[in-house]
Amino acid sequence: ALHWPTGLFVGLAAFLLTKITRIQSVSSMTASLLGVLSLWLFHSSAAYITYAVVAASYIIYLHKANIVRLINGTENRI
Image (cartoon, rainbow, N blue to C red; front, side, top):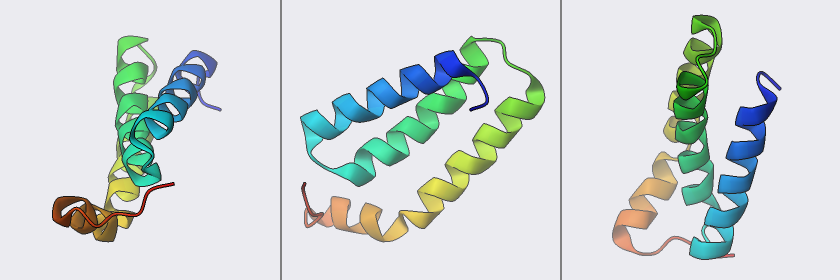
């Protein structure tokens, strides 16, 4: 919603990561980080990049249980 090329890139990346890894949490966390990178590469405003950094940090924080399961090798697959 902030920048349509970033949305397209992140959406495609998330779809491909989900297809490849079959682990939704990996694609969600990676997509949030790719959103920050994409906004930076597209020279978006500092406000958009700041918002993306805060959102990505929160998304990764919310996935802390998933990260533990990924490390232990017990994360559920789709």
